[in-house]
Length: 262
Image 1: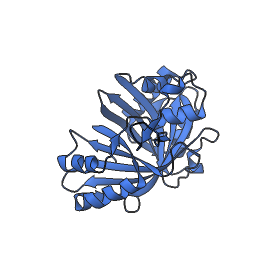
Image 2: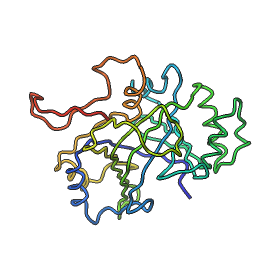
Image 3: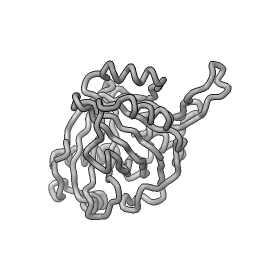
């Protein structure tokens, strides 16, 4: 059974595909492929929510001490009868908490389509979490906003079960077709030659991994996929200089830096 409530710390990195290949080689037998997908590889497609004022976007953008997002997620090719993950992702003092439930995608759509839904009327694995999701939706007046998808390679520590690493490729987003069962397509919001790495731990990154990341010059980046997609797809009031952008590589004078979005 999937874990429905958990917390952890996350560190994000923006790396090249070459760095990804070097990381996989250097980590060697210390990491194993996730049991899901094929050799730890699968596709993630998520429906994100916000309101007309883009309150969730601005809370995330301004890095409020406590902030949260709502998303409905499926894996690989999905149909209306596929299992969907409905989850609230919360962040407080750099610690990520997730509260999620599983329900058929069609049942999730039924809940979203009701004007005044009663959480007790829907099939899910956690009625309490659905009540929390319902309160969150009502409080912020949340509606489906956009679909974000990517191809993921996930790994776990062999001797450290709390260590998890995910590499996300081909990051795409769309706003015209919000049906998850229509697949992981959209416009790229990051250079396809780049990869978003997330290191997820309960306490701290192991010293051996920190040394490998440092040796391969993997730089930490705190940019948000959600914010970048919002800025790309929607008209939001934010100065150009504060948009979700970063550089990778380059000389001190920035003459050959590559501009990317994550």
